[in-house]
Image (cartoon, rainbow, N blue to C red; front, side, top):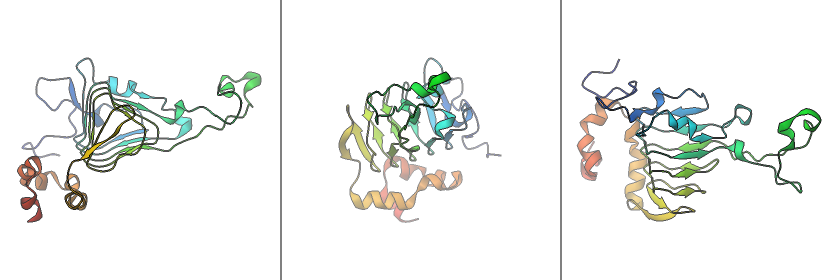
Length: 209
């Protein structure tokens, strides 16, 4: 039971009177989608569009999308999963095998690029697309309409098609400190005690814990 003074990560709609923003884990039905506490999704039409935008996620591929805590996911973000891959070993990429009957035994060597993993405190902008098996590091920002085809280092800002690094958010020393700090794994009480320092970038206050 969450203390009533704190936002409850187990509530579907955490902002009173607003149903375009949800704590995402509370609407997910597919067990191949794993979402951490306080990660939210915003969609003015219907927050349930999120699962519709996780494309080609088939149980026989056994891949997952794993999203950390405190992520911010905007409307129209799409995740392309491994079920979209076609074999490129032969002269045709057509998936004969999946249509069964006499074609059921046709070879189909599909490349599985593994799970898609989104770190903690990641902001993904409107209509961005994340390709198969991508890892996005903690604290990163993915620009609107970006097509992410490569892994993203922690605390990077990326954008474009294909997405490229625009800049790192902080210097290397600060990034390493924040990764070691991992504030997103603290208790909600401890986060709240240091919430001003986290929200304003008061490095000195966080170093004096």
